[in-house]
Image 1 (tube, rainbow, N blue to C red):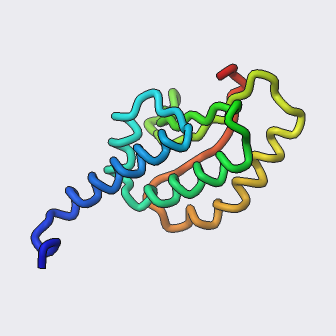
Image 2: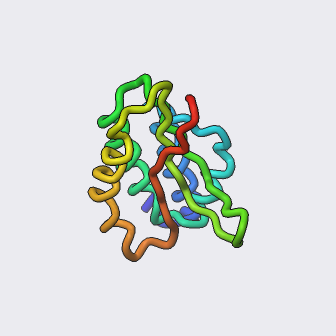
Length: 126
């Protein structure tokens, strides 16, 4: 059996690289890919969810909207999690409700996951 002797961490690393490549092909900006990669290695059960949510979000927002996948580092406590930032040149009045609608579609899938994934905006320009 060819795959029998492969180290699962190697398989996970290959899968994570495929996901990162797919996200970039889908127009998702990843400013610090090594941080995102390290996060997904530590919390590998998040990989499929991140790919799914990013794809759903890209469908909801046109290509002029920047989607940036980043690791957020909380300055007050030792905590970090993946964040997908939605950035526009001119912000629509309904951006927060659109983000909340997308979150409602995936929040139940976070249950039992080892990591956390947030989608938000910081109201910055792309």
